[in-house]
Length: 483
Image (cartoon, rainbow, N blue to C red; front, side):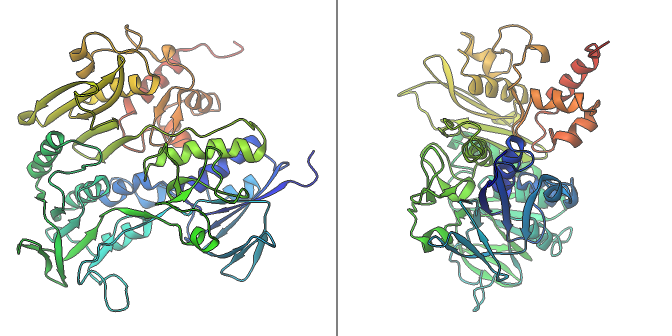
């Protein structure tokens, strides 16, 4: 037994910080190796922000998006400090100074400070004090959802600034509440980071057909309180509420005050160390060359590596990056974008299927006979199949059209749950593997609702619902161990 466990302080109790704490306790259940303190500025426990669009749409109550039970910290032996901010990290004394006046000594600090909503410098969005105007809200945190829902009414006009992934989730959620939604986006097509112009055009058509007014290539020039937005072309967007979803910025203020290297985020190496070897960073606030900003999955992958390192479970663990996979989680829209979405025929094999009449678009990019990128809108079967080829690196079949339509799979035969490897990712939104579902089943979660409650599979974008149900059916048919 280790007499003096390492004192590790996690600054931030969001998705990355919470996952890191879980991974540490998975390797060190009783705290023999690591004494863990987690500091969270928000007053409520960690929650899954992937699900905030469902909260906004009203398809999921806010109370079920939490990542931990109320007694998690006590049960896990974690010193959890909620509603407290870190004021200073005294590296000479190895102390973290908190806003309540207390201090916590450390051997290592993990910065999981996340990111904050960016509000463009548009006249009128903020008041003289710098606070948001009364009829302006951001869409980034659980409290933002509550603020938005307290102000919207069915039939009321609402403007969404930003046509990226988060902005479209907000727009679809508000549409579901009966609002008259206008999306204002400064680029010529929607979701330009994840989708090419052709795919963006089909996506805009889908949203327009649903009732969303899409204004592309336009920026807000002025916010007129109580009236809406004046656009840069002189146009006007009526709005009782303006929801800002124009992007995020890594929260690096604490790191900058410490003099750590910052370049868009806190610079880290493959061991997630900053320029101070006792300080680490992960999640949205971290900048690593193998990670696209704002990806939940990268923070979770980093949490696994860093937990291996700080507990000594695997001193050779290294973070090599996370391939980008994005899904638009909005009712009536089935969009997946992964890998090199902007690959061209100049350096890759590219196949596209453009079917705007039926609200469908697909682009498949391959190099050396392997999937390197894809945009799939309106082809749910293809999305699941192509994502599996992308994740596994399995050589693609010669019949590219079959792959594009979801009629091929990595094994070349009918894919059953028994064929899936244990580490196959079933639910990407919550990082649930086949092995995780099997373990939950054997622990007593012997139905789909019970598996969902135990693992949160299917509670993100929902695209894994069929696969989760198939695994449950397969498990139900297996003989009981010991019989």
